[in-house]
Image (cartoon, rainbow, N blue to C red; front, side, top):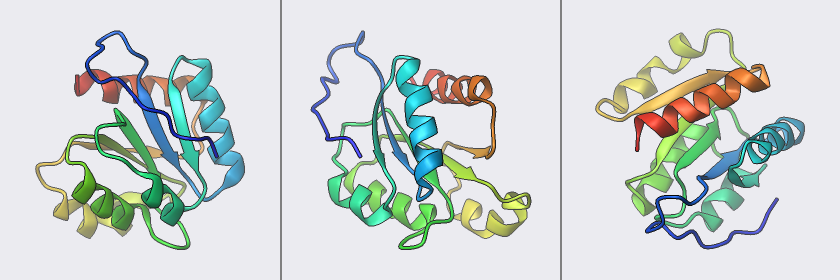
Length: 139
């Protein structure tokens, strides 16, 4: 886990800040490393409750949330984070083959929200393309 720093949202040339939350430590570490190697500032947590306790408004450009986590699933975490900050972009991560069917009722709750879903495992290049796409789409 990394410590949080302050972002200057007034600087358009600043590096994009991403929050990564995945209970699988090796997945979390791999994504964090790939993101940092591609120029992003990353705060990562392997515990949803700890991530929520450290979440701050106006800090993140993108939040990456694993859907299935033990203490709190990614959707519940997202709902709680939205009460703190209504402006961040979100991308959900899942290893489930049937993620759409399983989580369709939750997606219907998010009508009008922009979000993406990335299925794990994913090649590093494809992961970075997806992240950049989310950030570009939501400038």
